Length: 353
Ligand code: IPM
Ligand code: MN
Image (cartoon, rainbow, N blue to C red; front, top):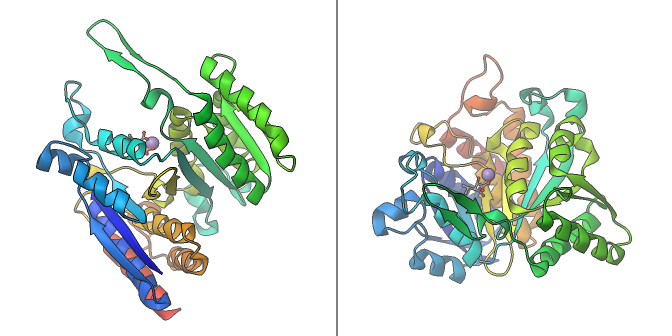
């Protein structure tokens, strides 16, 4: 298969982990006779420095022309504590999601047996936990009308029926293909937007008779994902709740550095780690490349390249079992491996197996 892949490395650790993601894709291309063509484009703080725009038109065009986007991370501390900054790297990410119509963000949460001890949660709660959070990505407070002056500021949590219907359809379809259990997470006891979500979900339930649907408030769900993670199969929720919930669920996996995601919708699908640009670690060769590499696996699986995706997953598990790990997940007394070494080990494994 030939795939044109837009490569957006962004800021901080982005370029380092992207290098490993691409190396792994190259190893797969060689082994399975595919042709992956990469088209690099700028985004984030890098792009602000270069052209004053975190998601310039040239990058948008590169994304639109590609079959898929592999994205790393954006963000730079120069902008974080400056409330007066007119442009921010994160706006690039949001513009990209909006312009590509990527309304469905798929964030799988799974455990690796050998990393269960890395989670602050109890083993017996975690073993076998395997669910996916479907986060709405182009609506809600992130994109609703905003206002800020010296005395008052607001953000509008707005959802139209069609936005709710299309994300719920993605979630119900996921549930049908998985363990047929959908949990709609909202705050319908307080928020009008949540009440519309709940109303639409209830209307749609009858189209999915095989799926058991339940409803949970976000505050309760935030507790239950930690106390009872095996309860869940598919969670669907709005943009802001999904953002918060998926940082929380990373403690189930044991490290933010292990969580990949896919963003799907109207135009080119995009694959990116859940974690951010970790600027403090940039250039130190300590960032975990696995979320990026697993995002590449999701990319391949999106195009039906399931054996290829499975090979990457097998290599990732093997690297963890072999203790070839970056510092944040290394066993006590074990050797630390760098970003490059972990990537190289995975490349070698793919070549040899
Ligand atoms: C994420 C990130 C982004 C978000 C930021 C960087 C704008 O936290 O992808 O989860 O809030 O969506
Ligand atoms: Mn987030």
